[in-house]
Length: 330
Image (cartoon, rainbow, N blue to C red; front, top):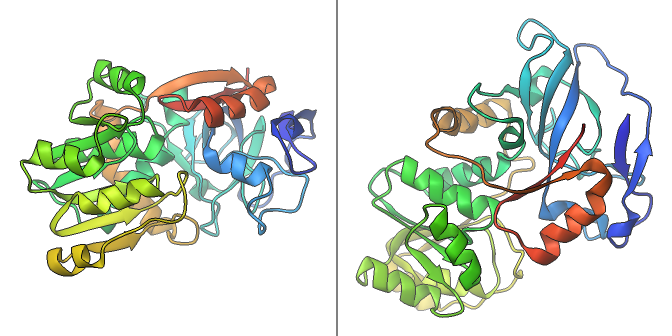
């Protein structure tokens, strides 16, 4: 079978197309043919050696994907179209401590699969962990219909999903940000509104303008760095910011009086090790009906052949596209 593997840390060109034996099925495992696998920023972090606890090399990256069941059971019969969860049976994220989905076939437990809705394409089914992450953030922030939400980075997987989910769940107003005028135009063309163009307006000023000075109830921050500073300033009374990413940096500056006088809270959200099977299913069930009905939709920037994995990773990291980047197995 085809697989993308690397044997040493380094640049994109360390990713090599290999032909490996098919996985051996154990106990009650199922065999799935991977059709699409996502390329995410964490893959670059692992490949470059910035996660010391990652699996011992050689390694296969990729934490989310979709495929077709080749050897199934009563719940997932042969031929079933499935979402392959990023969670391994022990609750950790695949492609970090264990091999991931940049391989043509995988042996998985039934608990690692979710039946793909009939209305969802294979590409879309491979691009859902941003929605899982955003839904988890809304839950952490105690979201309810009628609250206002700022979800940073409309072009990013979590930021974009946060906007769509907040609207679908009945937020009173949803605001987002774009890192450039070109991304803002792409977002507007895709139907997004209340977008703050960061080169022209600070987040806090944009939120004040849109909310008439009230601020927002909730911020989903998947970016970090100096944007976190501005996001905190954008919160209204009793506001909650949930931090789930730090691609723009791990440090920020805040005024403690904002927390004291406005009663703000900051809450961290991670995935690995925080969701058992029942908790995973709870989150999936919160947004899969919305996906099936078309109320939310993953946005795909580009699909690469599996042989182009190095270029796909470079494209994601350096060109920062609007939407998800996927690898395709023919």
